[in-house]
Length: 46
Image 1 (tube, helix red, strand yellow):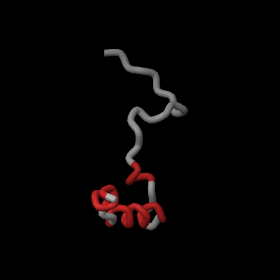
Image 2 (cartoon, rainbow, N blue to C red):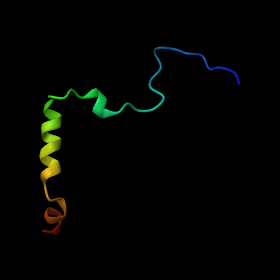
Image 3 (spheres, helix red, strand yellow):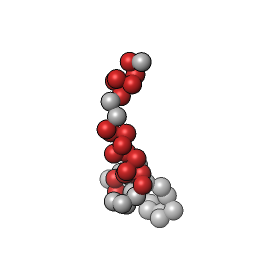
């Protein structure tokens, strides 16, 4: 099986996990936690 050329400038083979890219104390985690607390089926009902 031949190996493929490796170039550092190429992008990821798979998209990176956002959990690894966002710092633990970033505001995005606070917003995500608030959205998780919403009762989405109840909001969608109205």
